[in-house]
Length: 251
Image (cartoon, rainbow, N blue to C red):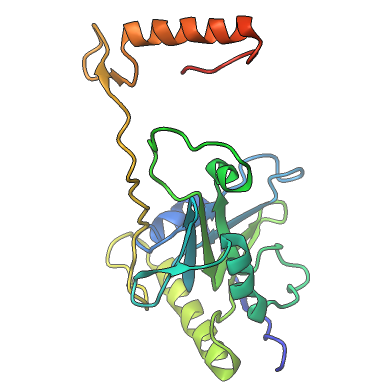
């Protein structure tokens, strides 16, 4: 099998403004925007925007799922990171020299709560956020900014296709993104060439956290009553005296 072709690359002139550009793609599924706001001479040199990935892998506790072309989540019997690596492996290619480092591929997040699958620690009693622990998309195009050089590029890889089909997809997707960039006003934007699937999360079977009104502050609620909070503080103090812990956060 021949190695994957290099992505199609087109420099964007004039350089588009990142936030405004992100807004032009807000209706697409799984928008990912890595915005560098610090000094471009240090850590803030590059920003990246991608959307409408070829597929998505998500994980919650021991359940890993992948989004299929019909917009359905199917179970995967694999670690989410190992699975996204396996999906990416056939498309791995040497990056184009002289361009920002992310040129398409896996992008997303690994949440703090994923640590509960790596260590023998209990899950929280209430799943207040009800979001995946891991969410990673396989993105075939990306807009990349080099803030130090004041330049930007659109790159399209054609993932997940191979051979001539990959070249055709790369060209089609590049054209689709350029069309959005060419529209002067938001509204009337071209639709994605695949079914739009909004971010959906696993609905936890755990009970919702308790909610109590806060006296004298209308519209504000807390997962503690005043009496319950004072009781929890007293228990923490007992644990400290007993040597079981040295601190706790009850916020």
